[in-house]
Image (cartoon, rainbow, N blue to C red; front, side):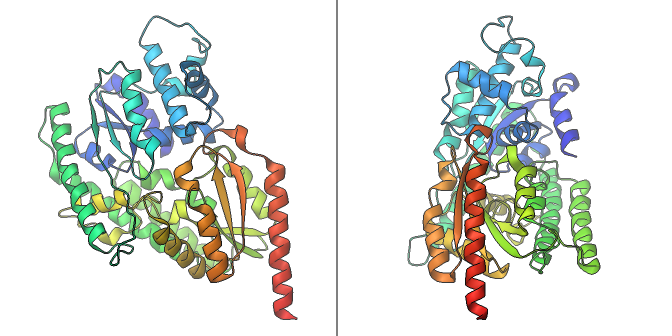
Length: 424
């Protein structure tokens, strides 16, 4: 499904389709209803990294002048923008030449317009503005402003309080403005019925996804964090159709069968961990095998369990705009530490977590900023130890396996010691 989606994007121009590049929140149901093709910047960067194909784009970005400490999602996608722009001209000079441009990174069609709807990250909020400059400031751009949810008012809390209500209405108004902008770009009236249909599929797919996640609270767990990582593309940016619903129904059915047959996600599960951090896409299979080799089942995480249409009850399929706006505010980098602590500790308790692994992504400050506070809170309030390892979302050079291995072994020894004392 993912490969078919990207091939559809690559061939959009041949079929006379308009293309929008966007970053951040899942505003793609609006594009789908408008009859557009859409390219999600982070998603394409993640795909390149997962397939070990990110280097041509990152090299292009480096040559263009973007430093290695810039968010590697943004740096990789900006490199794609440079390659796409170069492919439109006859000038093929510089380090990145014609051969490299045959790579996947250069296959993106140039955008007809940009939409930015990024929450909780200053880089993300500027990403499309910089892409706009790469294309000579000639491609229209629309920005949706998503306010940070500080959660520090007396009545504030997860999904409640005046701050939540006001921010929800503020973003909902902007989505109506976005739809008017899309109408101006397409020259067609917006199809509200198509949006309602798309959000009906998304709501049902999300319900099935959450129901399947609930089943994974069983011990041993039938599926792991890594399995949910492999399903992010589907819920995040693939077309909302019956096929999407069927996919998550199949996922849930498989988990039920594994529970009934006693098939665990990890053989010999001895430890249950929580993963905090955006995925290190270069090392997805590597990390899954690494932790399984130590009998660790990574049962849940902030990136998978607190993002991606994770509160389907908010969606009113007859009038979906407010529920969409609220989900865009629920990006896991868009909460103050008070809310993040609540969500992390809640999941750790419900999933029976023994320890937390923090992926300190080198170029993603938005995700790493609160991690030490979350670690201290879990230790203080739940007695759950944690470990940190450095890596990155799309740049493999920051990962050091020997550091992860030594810290993982040390934390497992700590857990074993605590268990032995508890039974003595």
